[in-house]
Amino acid sequence: MQLAELFERHHGELYRYVARFTGDADLAEDVVQDVFVRLAERPPRDTDRLRGWLFRAATTIALDALRGERRRLVLVRGRVDRLPMGEAPPDPGVLAERAETQRRVREALGELNEKDRAVLLMREEGFAHREIAEAVGTTTKSVGTMIARALEKLARHLDLDREDTP
Amino acid sequence: MTADLVHLDDTDLLRLLDGACEPAERASLGSHLESCPVCGARRALLERRVSRLSVRLRAADAPPRPATLPMRRILRARRRRVVVRWGLAAAVVLLLASVAGVPPVRAWIAERARALWSFAAGRRAAPVPAQPKAVPPVNDTAGAVTFASPASVFALRIAERQASGTLIIEAGERAQASAAVTGARDSVELLVLPDGLRIVNRRSSTAGYVVRVPGGLSRIVLQIGAEAPIVMVPEARSGRWVADLGARK
Image (cartoon, rainbow over all chains, first blue to last red; front, side, top):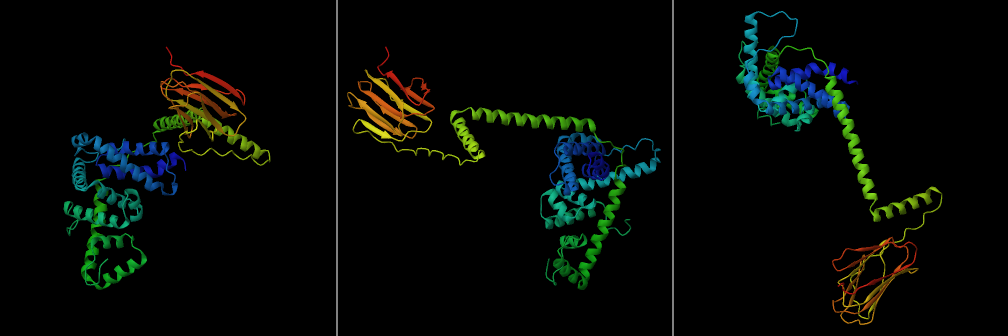
């Protein structure tokens, strides 16, 4: 499959995953581009598992970027994400509400360790435990444990068990 | 997995929810869930959490952005990859060329090439002459010694220059090498080594030496004391060299 086709197919989910993982949409954009540059430079031998490879590469690059840019991330925390060009500016109240939701979710995800966060978010992207285990280098059973641990923490931080929570 | 009287933990319940269990394990967990309301309630709670988390994550997602493949960077990376590959290939070729320049390797390559040529020509390759086995050092007791010569390079080492005396080296049609002390043999030893011969003499010695080696050697290397080695390259299958071992003034 051509690179452009792969980019078209996987860019969206990779961007969403990395933006969630890092809490920084700008950084996510850079990371996704780096992933495809790496794919062009050193493509994996096993193309059957390309999707797992892309997410694993994205996680590695994102972690490197986070470690290098931790200070910058602190400065931009709480910022409202840019809107796509041409979209009408939403109501300020909606913007504020979205910003608050983003802040809470980012804070909650930030409480997880990097591995648990990656595992939980890869599960959200529809990966099977076996695929996640391969991507993060652990056993299938450990993936279940990590997800359970992450979910427990997020349930507390985001009030997921409240009866009126949507 | 746990016994029926013990409740399932969240890991098992999540693996069950996500379809990550083997069939036997799934059957066993399912059977426990059917009879345990506590675990059933816990599973429902986990299901709710998972579903609510997805909703929250989506609500907090950054808006999607139009993106294009970074073609310029990709082309640059591909060019870099090509350069690195060619660089590595060139390095390997240089390394092989320099290794092939070393005489023993060159001789080995030539030998293999001859064998391959013979094989390609449909003939049975000539047997490769066996390398002489390393000979344990032998002390000369009678002033003469005969031994198996190295196949390609013969190293002749003389401990030091002496009062007077001459060294004669003869290459000719013979299978083995030999050495003999002429004149005063006192306090001189001939020591056979895997790569040739060492003559252990003394500064006061006046002995002469005749060393005979098989023809067909690629080089004969003579080293006297710590002096720079003298390399002799036989041009034919026979030859004769004479060296004055007297101390230089």
